[in-house]
Length: 552
Image (cartoon, rainbow, N blue to C red; front, side, top):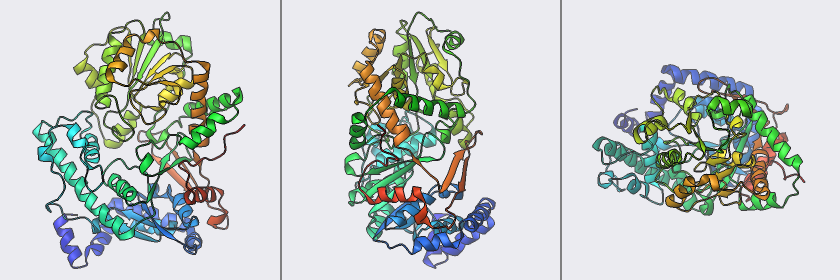
């Protein structure tokens, strides 16, 4: 809705009727209403009434989704908030009949709308201006009212442009950066009003790296509240839950808290634990469920070691190093600190160093999630990594092999031949270490500095290490065991298996989400085992939800 028209309608109290008309007229919104009514019938009134009878002591903001199907993923979380004694208020960008209908039936006690707290576009902002910012680094460091608006503006700009290294000296890029920063400031003001009005004891997020969720995350923490995140796990049907405060605000959701890591290091360990972990990896990769949310391993093949070496044209007399690329423009600044300016800079410098070291076989593996993200965005162009190689490096030498994002070779198969794994902080670094490879990181924020990775402290040290990588000895058995303990915690103990909803991802181009309700026969939320466990965690103070104590 045009902001000026919207302001006029709000002035006369007509904006709600305009939203209702939009929901009834626009086909996509009308279809969402149909899905919402079907879900309401499936839930029935008993579920909502049982949750509404629960006593509440504090408010919790639940950042809502944009689609009804996605909202169903939050059903166990909203119910668990009720069981834990919270009054969940769902935050939506704008009024939406379908979403409001579903969230109300799922147990929401009310709604908050960003559109009610936003100043109209064009209103002079008191925040920082982008016309004096001439670099991505300068933009990244800007804060406003305690929110990292520059980081969210730069992340949004990179997502808009699919650029891993935006050049703000270009007038058109700087103009878009100004638009992103202005939007970030505008939403920060709105988030500040929302936090002041509702003083949430906690807020629940899925993705808090972009505008407007990022600003709300920062401001809730700054106001003394807690934040919790939920993310799809590495396999269908399970979530990763994490509690955040000021002290751990930059930690990746798929990390182990200090308490969890201490627990895992102290637990008795045997080969049975490694076999259990390996079976989990084998199942998820071979079934295609491995991070199915972004379709990383759909329809892959698993060549044996000798076949794979021949297929890739590797020299069997040499060791093999693999560079596992990150998507340049996706979640670049969300977690930890990077040695290099950004993922693109790391990639280019690392591949250049690989080209200069023919003592090893080198594999350059483009991130497979590119394929699914392209489909969702309707993108048909080249991947940034391919462009970067062509423009910054040129033709790769014979000892460097490229595996494109759509390669049919499973990443799991590569672990049989990889001796060295290079990543900033990707999951492949942990997996490779479990299979006995040396993992060389280029940043903090996931599993670095836990005793099983090599963690250079500067770009110079990182590049010097690559130049003599073949001389680096393999990890010790103790280091490999630490990697396996860490992976055991992240893949078997940290995920939260759900029973009140069952979800998965179709192996289609967009990795479409499928969700179905699986409620207790009597529709009593208090009798659902997953809800009780999540509610206990929400009411407690632990950073990590652990679905079971590590087994002895």
